[in-house]
Image (cartoon, rainbow, N blue to C red; front, side, top):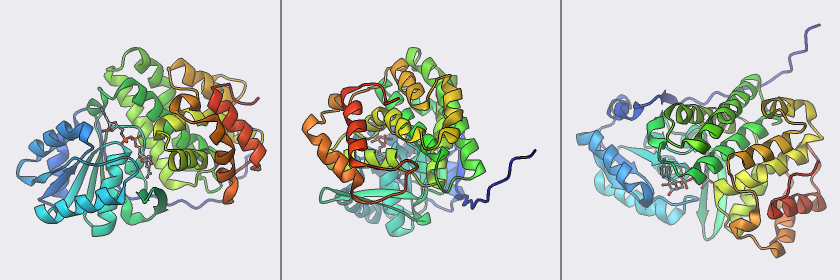
Length: 357
Ligand code: NAD
């Protein structure tokens, strides 16, 4: 007996990926290959030194640096950066950093058509998606457009050796969340499921090593490989409850992006597990657990990730409103969404309790 092959539609996003320790050295070649000669290097203030180093590496191919990228891509920052693009006559951008910096490169690329190189230094995965979230007047809006996606992505594990320990773990769980929700996505395809599972396995192997030895080069390489795979899944298929909840908690309650993902993931997966037990079975196998939700919870605990939303500053009094916002606009999810169900999920995540069985 052969299992039936379900139909699928697959969109492969065209970007060039260069992976490997020391890969940053090829940055000038990659800029030239795009036909560009004046790259504006972008970063957050925290990574201004990395931006300067990348500009030095580019030498005469560098138009300058802009080091004011900020979380959730505020439109004011993009407009300020566009002034720098015009002033320097830049013909491409090089974003060096996590999702915040990649977001700025995307926002510039979408508005100007300038080609983008993304040098990823966290595991968030934005560099391989056509998705852009921007904030204006305190409101975050997200859309997907192929013109947003960086043309070239460089993954150099050496740039992640000093990623702080808390950020390492939360950013990795953020990436694993893309893959976990990808396993039950309505528009999943064979490749997205294979990549997602391989990405989760890579993190399951690397993170316990990094918990004890943050500068272990092999484990850093394996984690970044997982990030590429999980981010690619995010760029290919639709997300559900977990991403919606994190969007609400980040957008309406200003909770930090990666840590929120890390805390909510076991609970969102547990909420959906009863509806799609077969699709989540591979996750149970990876963690050797009786349920995927509990497996993720125990794994997060083992690697020292945060567990309670209250520790991120969310007030217990906000849980009702968060559950209400998360059920406001209907969106697809494998399990039926109810306000009481989400309220109870959030209460567990708030207190740091294990997910519902
Ligand atoms: P981030 O980019 O905000 O980075 C957090 C901090 O860590 C910054 O100060 C950064 O400079 C610093 N940092 C990054 N890499 C470092 C390194 N290797 N060593 C030392 N410091 C380093 O964090 P993030 O979690 O990568 O990105 C979050 C943002 O990305 C959110 O706005 C989120 O909405 C967005 N995002 C978008 C997508 C998408 O597909 N559009 C996907 C994932 C995340």
